[in-house]
Length: 445
Ligand SMILES: OC[C@@H]1[C@@H](O)[C@H](O)[C@@H](O)c2nc(CNc3ccccc3)cn21
Image 1 (tube, rainbow, N blue to C red):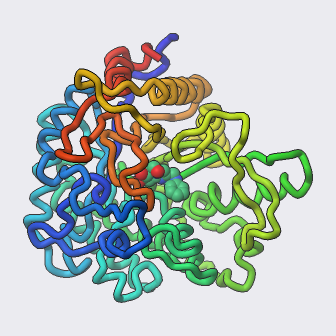
Image 2 (image 1 turned 45 degrees about the vertical axis):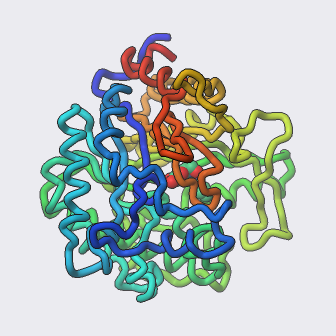
């Protein structure tokens, strides 16, 4: 196919600190809520923890060499807040910052653009014990952390993401309790969400003070399709669309929450002042899009507060996460962003799939289903580009098999297999495929 991808299009891969680094308490680092959550019996499959993960903390230069072999032009990673500020505020841990400075310098030496995420779910325990994201001071804590990191790294990091998926921090974290800190409450999520948006805005303000203009937020997006044409399912899909796709982006871009949120949360939805809404209006310089699948939705009065549930289609290909392989949904999502938010600059900051990969043979792991998934989704991105979407980059989730949160190490998204024993990295055929895509600037799909 004709390669619609421009020469300066960024081809990347993405990871996050707690999922790959290991050594969560090394060199003065303070524990995060994910360290505590993973060590709480019953929270993570197989009693897995991030204590070792991919041992990236000791293998970062080896991993940068793998990225260079792929020909990546960008690498999205996150910083562990607790490595930089062990108590979340106050004293800086220079050995923690040194790790990230060495990583950034190695990336730059290989011509790979660092894309740094400030927060990928691993809040310092010390701040959680002060109320965490429920504390109205949490936006100020985040801005202090962001400013510390900007001062250390902004001369070398061209692209910043403040928060990864504030929806996931809010809903699995505080509403259904599937992810850290594991709260199950109806009144906490709206307040946590508002504090996260204020935190994003305060970090952007700190960044703007440096005169820079390449910062954004990464959101998980999935088109919501009704399981049937019934009015109840149509209404359920609309409600779930507001709940997942529009909650944070409408706040960020328009300075208002979708009206469905007050219906969904009822008395748990606070009255937000005009002043507070004005503060959260902070679109940044781009939107990071984490896309994996769509939602097929049916009405479910038995599932408050949404009264809608995502169902797993019986006639579709599914990944190991039971997520439908639905590449058309990526094009749909990118066009929706173009039309709803006036064609903002976009990066696909995560796209990938977990499959049960076989053991390596002659040092290579055959993963044809992941190759097919990536091929289809890169094509879907190309289709959106050809329709005028301002798409500037694509990051595969993930570079390495890693700690998949509550699923532990049982679900593997990596371009490289990580040996469960000695953590040896071995390429999958999807890595070879992606290297060819990058070399051909997208023509190989
Ligand atoms: O599950 C795969 C990745 C995960 O490893 C990343 O850390 C995270 O950024 C990520 N987000 C999604 C999509 N959204 C989502 C929705 C509900 C729960 C968890 C993730 C998938 N993934």
